[in-house]
Amino acid sequence: TLLSSFASLGDKMGVRGYSVISRSDLLQDSMNKDGTENRATLMHTMDALVSHSCLIVDLSDGGTSYQSTMALSKMWEATSTFFTAIDENPELETSTLPSMDVAEGAGSRHAVVGYASYKDGDMRFV
Image (tube, rainbow, N blue to C red):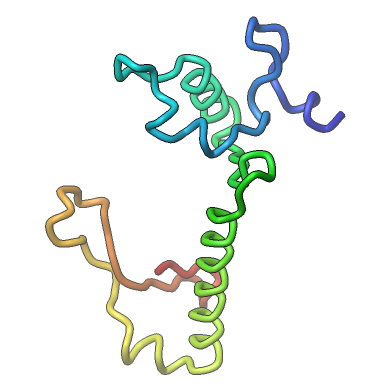
């Protein structure tokens, strides 16, 4: 299958890498009672990030809840609406949107807020 062609095989945990992890496994409630991380969840997460630079999360927890999936869908809709408005009114890009700048009080120079466009709009960040 496609999954097994990308996943690491042969370890004690079975298939790793592109295996899907449930959203609920990543919540604080799934930590061990002593406050340490659940080892299986930690190893799955780290292997996925090291092996593939991504983690595939089932936001519906196997189809039991769609609240998180709907929230993410609405965020994508808002993003699409924002960029469509910019495409339809290019003057908004320069007249009303603040440029990228360090987020005040965030504690990191890498935490930024604002809007930036590069390569004639090929890459846009908000």
